[in-house]
Length: 280
Image (cartoon, rainbow, N blue to C red):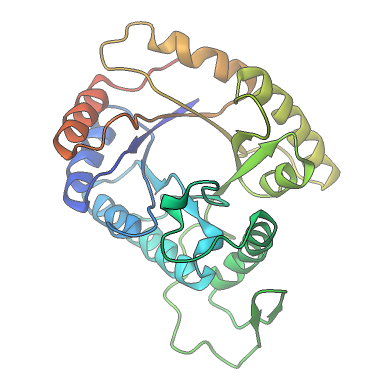
């Protein structure tokens, strides 16, 4: 089990200061929220890369269908190079049913966003290889040319692709298959109910069978559980342990209860200094 922390609503300077605290106190990952507009998540992660040496860095999460895949590829590659190969890309379809997240454009609908997601996931490895390629999809097309213009940034340190975690909605097979064929599953529950340890256990079993059918193993595949534990909680490990037993390989600590910058900074620093809620 590895342990990460999501910095809610921070700015680049705060992230640059808190990420090394997380690293010094035994956390394995430091993540930031990627908003529709405002503080740039990848600038924040670049700042964190400059102040850390070991800890994994990533978004939690990137609404990939709302981004141009070539922009995402360049940002991810830049931070992966800057960090020496420590980036994790987490992606989902984006928030639905909330007008606050669709201020500047209309929601094209879940079906179109799913199509954009699939094509983007196909394009990203091509973009990261720094080699000419051609692609023909419903939404994106690229013709093969002798060389990329302008010159592409150096490819990511991590090959053949930067580890990519994908939201998979249980029990929808198409959504789950999308996550199964990448590098990690961010569990979501479709319908009435919520993600539980039983949902995770069932999902892990489904993913294992799907990967076996595709000739893939579970080696290196991540299953991510998210929740909140507190700095003064002596029973925090007991909160995490059932998720590990269900098959989760990462626990991500997240607290979205406040948007006040001072309160968020203080709470984050307290939680990070207390160390991860180790269940192992």
